[in-house]
Length: 333
Image (cartoon, rainbow, N blue to C red; front, top):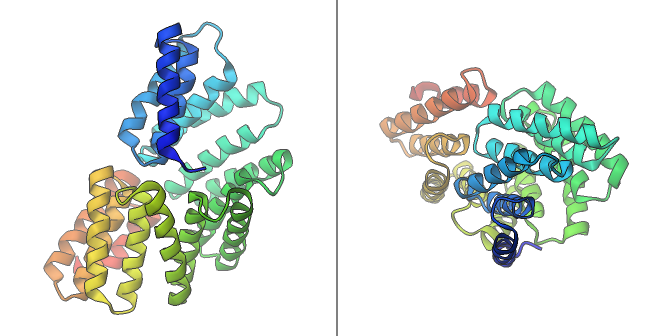
């Protein structure tokens, strides 16, 4: 229901009771460490989330006969956290381990499908689009077979396939998959959920790429409003949508407004994610584009060089984002 302060309060109260009754290093506590880590991850508090996730996995690994289902859930969550922290190698290590456990204990399950969905997302982040497509298509078939088409899990994978198709240039498939994901989420979780905001943000990117600036603005504005209400101003997702609106202003020639939003997005990403994250790199690149449009070529070169350096360090020199950043820099470098 996206009431994260209440969720956090209840989890903390439950953890305090379980720790007092059973001790802090037992499976009953591990389950709550995992829930807290996932909650903090959703809230964009990745550094705060990581110790909880690591502790949950460590407790399960220390058990002579762990609950394999809950152990796999904790390992899966740790893999997810490493992905959003832009550590793809560690993400794959934990997600593959979670997948092996889930395949061992389930014949078929939406849980297996969701782990493969997460693996597909890692491949997408690495620019390994063909492998991402295989994982996501497999995840979609498995999840739909177990929980049906009308389910948030199914919509989640459809949205991930849509954004993959966007980066691969298949605009028709993007529209179909993102629109279906949005429709399912609106019916299943309501129009004010952050899943809906994510779908609208992605549809806004599609509309912007097609030159439909009015539709893009409507998508971005609604996504930003939902994200700001649920997550606050500093969340990386809120900053992402703000940055997209800034690029829309840039396309419309509203340069002062574009600079204002790009500056704020960069501030948020640096504060929450630091200097070694693709989102920070994208914000730096966009600051460079805005600066170039304003005629400040020296500042533009500095921003773009910093962005490209991050992309190379985190994603590699041949990643699609690195190549696109170099192309965007053009004569500024």
